[in-house]
Length: 572
Length: 49
Image (tube, rainbow over the protein chains, first blue to last red):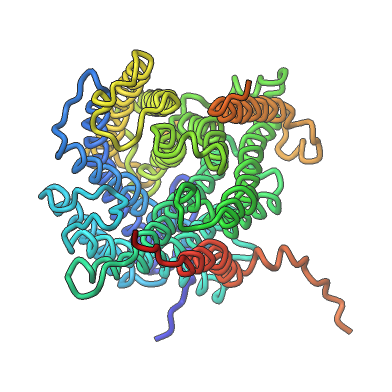
């Protein structure tokens, strides 16, 4: 039997309740199979987020030297647990949910195969549970990176292989759906930008998961005693093809979500589709090379390889981030000005729908990712500067800004639409929901800054106890305290998010048959007209001013780091 | 006579997910993985003291 991607027309006998439903808020057709697996993957993602969040507070209260909560063995155990749950499980499950949404709803298509979706979900879930059980049994205190010759229980590697292959199967379902949707012409012209962003994420995921398979299969067979130990330097290089690239999948998914929330909350449309898509193409081609950052002090690979991959080709991906960093707020500004919010340079900012937690979370995600994560990432990824920062808490401060302040916050923000639109329940405790992004975003900002400044003073990452070194003064301890306070705030924000999600799914009022309760969207002033500023390049002057501030901050930070490097060998 | 206007190359690239997939896999595999793998493979064994 040939598979047809086309959804039945609204009103057809198998439309409601069988194959598809019409969304009461957006009017879009929703494939019920895709909806089911979006729910499964999103719920699993939030469970792993909760587990990783509990681990996070235990770790922060241990690195906060004045508290120093955990015993040494449990510190490394929980650090392993935290890394895998937050960086791999929470993110990958949510990304599969995003992929299933992006290939069906915007394209008016069915999901290619429920059987494939089941297989993917079962493999991912069993693998993640296997990994977590083995870690908590104390049989895999090897940290997330599991660098050889450290060796964990074979089920640890097998679990990661299951998660990687399961995700790859989910990605296959995404590509297969794209293929049949195009073949059956469920849409006209190019795929929507949100789907294009998800496509970029899926392509990067293929590269990522291939590296995962290449490195984990021989490590698994070694742990079983079947083969010799893989070369540790080779292991590090291939592992980072999994470890760092998986975070680039996040970046693409996060940016796609930025465009989606900008549209849902303000009606923003990309200021230039070709430029935005071109930026995603730069991600597809070049962002994976950033994995080389982790090997900048490795002796095995040469300077040419390091500099090409981190400081030349990689900058094309940085260019892509800066393009998105401009076009996303610019699209919001144009939309707001077209609605009549034209006062001064930043009147549109003041009139934006700040009471909408999705909008607030999205803006905080853009700011934290760009100003903190982006600037520190490019600077720390420079080979010469990296030598004064490698393996310090500065690195941890950087990726908590990108992955947590950027990606996790964006994923949380879009959930304020996912649950009402996909689970069809209106959020409970809407006041608390409006506070949540600020609590989590503010907390993670403090975590990132605390780590970064402590790292600047030389505090190492992944270190249980800095006191025996006897070289860290009160300033380092102060910044570790800032990190600890931030972690408490962020984890309260995370727990509130989980409580809101679970409470809403269980007890939220059903919105079936009516539009979801409005979080607050940008309102049009009398006399305003959509599309009126399409050819007015100065309509984005506020964003241009913000971009100038960003570039100035970038220049100052970059200069300060070269100065700090020069101070390593003062010539007088 | 064919009067159809051919779409720009960049647009055709962006509308072709399979070509993007091939390029997206090839570029990092060549630039990061293969090149790095060759560099590691060419390291001479250290002499024992």
